[in-house]
Image 1: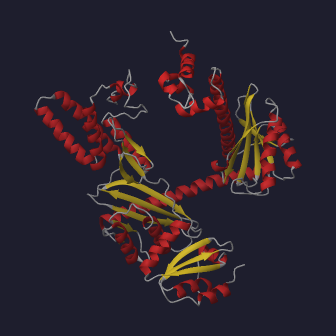
Image 2: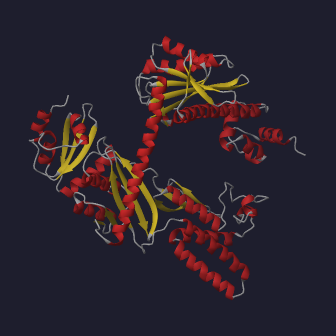
Image 3: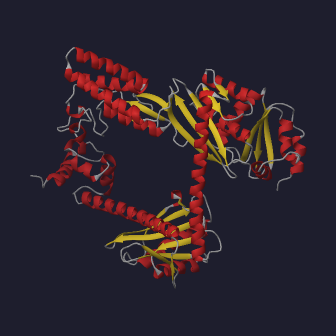
Length: 606
């Protein structure tokens, strides 16, 4: 139990020095990390009861069991340590900013026929990497467009091998077909260099260079080369037109603006690089402090803990510790980083646009939330439920001709699919054509596990209601299991009409008409999703079984070799296309077995 008087007395013993404090709960977990110019004054303010505190601070203080602290030589060192500890421990009551897209790289392989690709991780190989970049989507799109413009391959073929025929991209003029040696190695490598220069220097420099080369080729009456360069110029200009660009000269800065409502704040970030608005980010955060505190927390965690920091950051309001944060960022990146709050001019107009987007995103999020809230309220009213069904589980069975009978469970949390809690079931004991027994087995296994293990991190909590894809008999089968295991959870069936479309909800005794079109759409989406999940699992097992049966028909190929072959080639189709030499090279295979596999797939060819 939290003892404010005890914690206040303890805080009075702290030194009047700068440092970092760590608030901990009864289990010893760190729930908040902060820095202070004066540890005694700052920490004691939480427990004195004299200062007005926001909801967030009040909740945090209620959960504090004890605190620890670290003394530093200066407030600047305290800020550095605070940022480091927040990154390491990610406390509950600090604003936690997840990098939703992470960093991306452009990879150029270092071999005879290099490839250019977009990757999410940098590995220790001989390749050259450009980056890291933020904005995975924009970088991937840029690489894809560059490959099209310079007619470089984006397929999975091994360019070190020579193929008989090029793929479709060659015939639609999107690839120079190095796989069939339609282009010389020297000319191909020159294309790679051009593409890398484009990716490094950007559109403007590359466009200028290509235009000069095009004019020169035209003057020399080399019209074929001029036409080729003209096509590249046009393609690059098209990319430029399609990108969202703000004309701000060659500025490199981030604009950060905040909007708020009663529950959340919306932080919008505009990233300008070389005058281009290359990326926008939006964060919807739960924060109950004032905007200065929110802005300060965001700047510290979004920049002090990250690697993508521009020379200038412009804000729509003031922050705490501005000079200290500037010093930290400048020292970390080895160049001057300025934080400013413009009151007029070009930067101010950019912030106004940024703030409008922050409000728009906050409004959109609120509307989406309200939409799902209304759906859940409709469901509560239609089914006469005691509580709003925020956590729903839905079940379905899928089988075909007495084979691969499976069950699927999806979870709908706050009106939206919660995919991390989805579960799949192989039906073992029930008859493969008995949907009711299959449903009993699936529900029993799910809730029997809960009864044994309780609510763990790996097991979903108990649902507010259960929806079954089926009629009264399906509901009865599942309800019998719940009664047997002593679970009191409302359970309903989702009934379909003769055309396999959602028609009504049902108990084990009577149907309930769906009067609201909004609720009808919601129930349909749940029914479609659980059906999709069940069918996709069933198809996966069926394809695996069919693939397995095809390979194991070959003398000498048992389950172990079958597994190795599939792992090596990836699919039955790839195995069928493999040569004897490639088959023989697989672990556990010899020449005789390789010939048998090859002949099995090619014996019927003319």
